[in-house]
Image (spheres, rainbow, N blue to C red):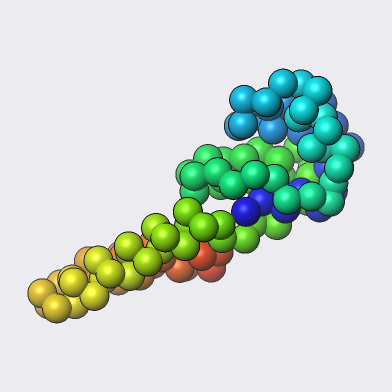
Amino acid sequence: MIKLVDAGRKKIAIVKAIKDSYGFSLRVSKQWMDNAPCELPDLPPTKKNTLASALRGHGATVILNPGPLDKLTALGCIHAAETALGEGDMNEARRNLRDALTLLGDPVR
């Protein structure tokens, strides 16, 4: 889930980023921006991160929380990590757990 807390000063750029990510009309995209603070509809994880980066780049205040798709994908990563541990592949287990944490909003460096 993406929560648009404040649209900032570059309103046109914010409307365009929302329009490009969701395929909304300009009117609908502007309504979402005008309703800030609001929760934008859920997107796949890669599109969500791209939109959040674009909005932040244009001066908006954004909070990312894991949505249902992220949680399901994270569960799949955790299951893959368990399987890798069972096979003794510690590097694969670490990679899958790192992916799960990233999806749940805790980027691991």
